[in-house]
Length: 508
Image 1: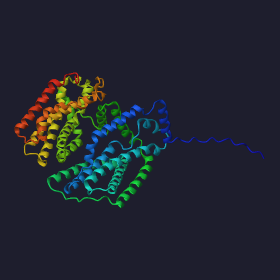
Image 2: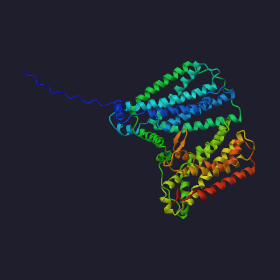
Image 3: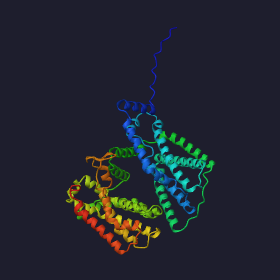
Image 4: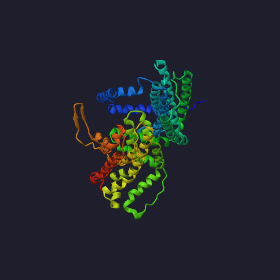
């Protein structure tokens, strides 16, 4: 009986894992060019050392003051820790928190690579960010809530609880990325929580809140139980990585890629275009015709239409009007910075159109508008928004803050047009000019383009000197003071419309 020789079977090729593919890519890159030269390592170490030397003492004293918080302030500190936790969730949600690099998104995601191995580094990165920020919040909480002196064991318990809480918040953001229903609830709950916590801080300035005794430290069973819960949720998140749809990775990856592009090219103008596209991409809009009888006011009609479609942002801006009063308990410059930033943000709700006018002036040429007239029309709505916001903010600050009595609301109304002019200058800044000659200093040469772009428009604040002096003094402002500020604002607007729009930057 003869045996028939069997044909040799060909083994099926084993699909490569994500780790092997990444190792292969890194090896090829290393062969082409070194990843980190000695010069780059020296620059990185020097930058870190300079940052620690300059900002280290201030950050250290802010994180760990010499004395703990008083019993009435401990509840406010606890509320601010809750606000920091809500801000951490919003930060993670704005970046995914799971995202891939552009190369991985383009070449590795469509390939038959195990999804779990591809996304596991992104999950570890999100957990590390949450744990690091949670540890910082726990350190600040221990400095203000724990009974002094704080022993090493108690500080370790606080840090362990902060790391666990940060990891839990990161897992919450990861779950929201996979489930759109969770994402909608989280995106509405966290800002509402921030508003509620800000209202609590304002209430503490009006009436005394219950005192909170000093805490010895979180109990060990609580920390261990939270750690076990987070470990179980992490295992579930690793299991669910295979079920994450590709569509949930594209937008966060493109967003983070644009952030990295802006940092690498030193071009922050990329971010404004990114935020505008991302905002309108999520909304289903219907075309609404403009009134042809008011052809010269078409830019104003467009701004009104944009303002109508951004009603939610107006609501959050209205909820942020007490922010200068909330920050009045800190340094003297904090309410002033909050007032300027809030008024400029309110004025910038409709200024995306002005950025497009500067970059692409063809449409306004068809309308027959000059650059000066187009800017004057675009300035109407930002002036109204900044004036209303600053008036409400200073009214609340004058009522709840430690300012002397006076017509603060009127001073805020007079300050509004100056903030609108600052927002318009920032919108017309365009891209950074990297062709300027280098400035040589004893510490080395640097390009002045980024610095000029950063401080573009800050000179407008010279016309807000009466309001800023009244807030930093503090000076009791009268109606004459308000009239001086109003005159400075009118002078700033007229001077810019006459000499600032020279036709080369916004000629249409």
